Length: 190
Image (cartoon, rainbow, N blue to C red):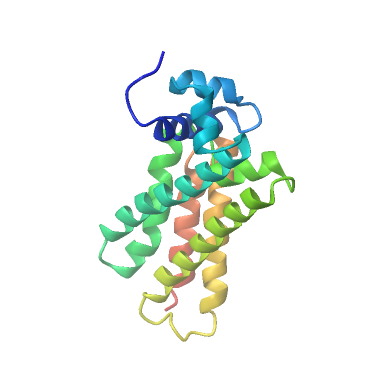
């Protein structure tokens, strides 16, 4: 039975939930349509295929994720607190999401090299995150121009990514806390 609302938004919201909760490959189009309460014609008129829906999901997820992280960062004023804010975000969000990990890495694990455009969206998300963390790091007094700044930025990015994976493995936020502690130690010599 169709529910009121924009069919495109309903399809995308339903697909996003299902792709993250049960996986891209395990989610069939018929399930998405049934749970969204829309006709099959709506899917094909708005997205064309499941792959196009997957691509739209990744684009929307990146925008939503960065909005949420930026909100947490902007609430902080001290440069180190701003750098650690994305980790604070993980510490609250990952348990709320049932320790399912990163939706981008989860998607990449499922699609492998078979969907180049989706693979590019995942890579773009990670590149943007890496640049963002680097930018936050450079705002800390004494970092910009330091010979180790680029190495520190890469280390922080890898700590962030590793914390997400290990949080999924252990179903606990201790990896995020350990990453934050490591960053504080790394930058304590400034």
